[in-house]
Image (cartoon, rainbow, N blue to C red):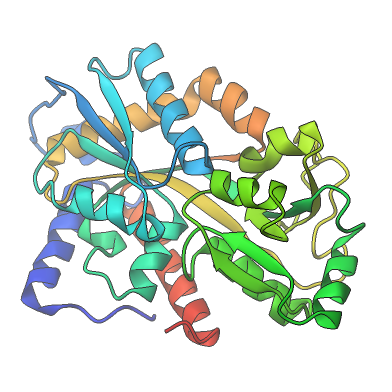
Length: 339
């Protein structure tokens, strides 16, 4: 299995600390829950510093604020949760902030492929296993949108991009992340000739499209749904294996595979914390995530309403999942010449 080069003894120890901190068996349940490990109890005594490493209005921001609201409204966290946006560097600015909070049990952040991929592309010291991975709580599909009326179909965009090299610009957030990979898949699997342009947030991309400065962008359904329903953009296709027929406004959107292009891709949404988080705190946050994952305010009002797929992955299962995600993005970036 492909793994990044370990950065000396410090990273080996960090990896061991991460594995130890999960306190979970192969079933994915906290070890403390069955009394096999005495870690003591922990609960936040002050404010929770909840970092979203992307700008306001994007998918990660909506995810973070929804998660914070369900935690509070459901009574799962008896503390004030303060969400702050620390954008930049494809998610690395916010991740670096959390990395600097060593041992702080009350600092958490959203974690998505953009952060993992940006860390790989930039050879960052803030790789996925240098902070505490708590849980994965959802999967989300990717779509491509353009200004309303600009193209009748994805085939039209692809044809135009080949007839006008360099003119079709597609915005995304991050280098070598899920957005970048989707744009590159269009070029490789669909034979397009699009230029990927980096932006800090989905909101910025939408503004650029509506202002005529950008041809289109890669979006999660939650990021473009409002503009799609308002008639500001058209959604040409989804990158998912299955149609997005359960999402309002996306019922008629074709998948890339339905259009004859061999593309099947989706992203994850997770929660992470500062490095060196205590076993007791990790168990606390895992239990909070379990409760959130079963709350109708999460499963129906957020996941179902926005077309996300439910998930709840913790412990050893989460470690294995993240190892697999790392390998996927590492290999993709290497194959596409990004590293």
